[in-house]
Length: 494
Ligand SMILES: *[C@@H]1O[C@H](CO)[C@@H](O)[C@H](O)[C@H]1NC(C)=O
Ligand SMILES: *[C@@H]1O[C@H](CO)[C@@H](O)[C@H](O)[C@H]1NC(C)=O
Ligand SMILES: *[C@@H]1O[C@H](CO)[C@@H](O)[C@H](O)[C@H]1NC(C)=O
Ligand SMILES: *[C@@H]1O[C@H](CO)[C@@H](O)[C@H](O)[C@H]1NC(C)=O
Image: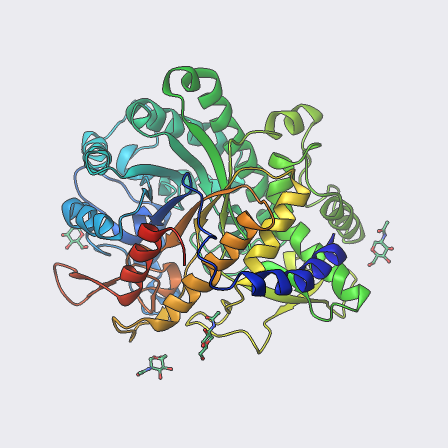
């Protein structure tokens, strides 16, 4: 697979060059453009009208030292109070859809299904109705990291009970909003949810359970996603007619030296451990975890003296239950990495995902930097990833649900680097569609506006709209990239 893609890369430099400036290459009429946010990052109003705490409220308040600038999302962009402003700005972009997420403890403060918070329903109903009145489709993410703290107190994603709680929440969302909302993403970025909170201390709940809790979290996430999909399939699809999918976050992994077989193995393994960890159980013909993860983690666990593999096992019934539970593949993509095998290919005393993986990831110095050091710019990587998806998973329908550029806090309205970024990555998307026949049907820019970037606080700006976080009204101003994106949407070519 990797050799084929490397060859493909060379051939297409020629093909693409031949198409430069060719205005006949346009996005298909059915292709949709959108912009995205998530609840904690923009809403604020963390303690109004019956809402309870999410893990983010709790951890940002209790351990501000874990956030780069000690900040939190108490007010964020104040979007809870600014539905009309946000809709006017989305109209300026002329997007076909708006991807946003539901704040679980705003809707179900006690996590009990009987305890619906009327103000939570009011807020999302108003947002959904106004979007539709303005010709903008709502695309909803059920879970973009706002776990009710009361469920975290039970162990959160590492306790299997979370599956039942998540399905209750999904049922409320389908019941209350599903008459108008036709595109649902169950869970956003499983890899980040598990690896960045159980391995790297970057996301709430900031738990140290390296190489153990990480996989338990992933296991329950897959079961929770599948259960929500089955609920929709069994009880809602016939009358609501919408789609349910899953959004994974993935870099592309390039072999450090494409002529070195070990580096090719490293890149392939990194893709298995990152993308296929979640994609294989849902989107492959056979289902279940990728064989390379199974073998390696089983072996290391046994050498480390565990009675069971640290990677939990699905029963054959569960493999079947999870396989095929998606109407589309949601993809968030920001960057690519160079891959080479790490020197240590034996199990450490203390397990970790990194040790299981055994690959060192770096950036090519030729790739432009962004304000987040791990996010370098390599637009062609997206095209290669889209081709990998096409080849590995039988060309599924792909929605690109996030892609965007991190600017520094001191960024101005003249965000030329973001414009290059969008032009580069959208060129890759267009080539993947028109030349490679990848089934990509939509693209979502992250982000609609600057917002609270998790434990980076307000130190990074991802938005097409500049937000003044010093202003009590959180005034929004379009950056240059907003007009460029508007133009791309209007003309349907780059
Ligand atoms: C809500 O939180 C804010 C801080 O963001 C605080 O000033 C305010 O008093 C709180 N309101 C209630 C009702 O607890
Ligand atoms: C298990 O891992 C050890 C240490 O890396 C390696 O020597 C051995 O070949 C592996 N065994 C299997 C069955 O993969
Ligand atoms: C903006 O901030 C970054 C990071 O703090 C710094 O490296 C850069 O020099 C600053 N740019 C300007 C124009 O001040
Ligand atoms: C990288 O930065 C240079 C300017 O330093 C710019 O010309 C180029 O378009 C950028 N490439 C991408 C893909 O952003």
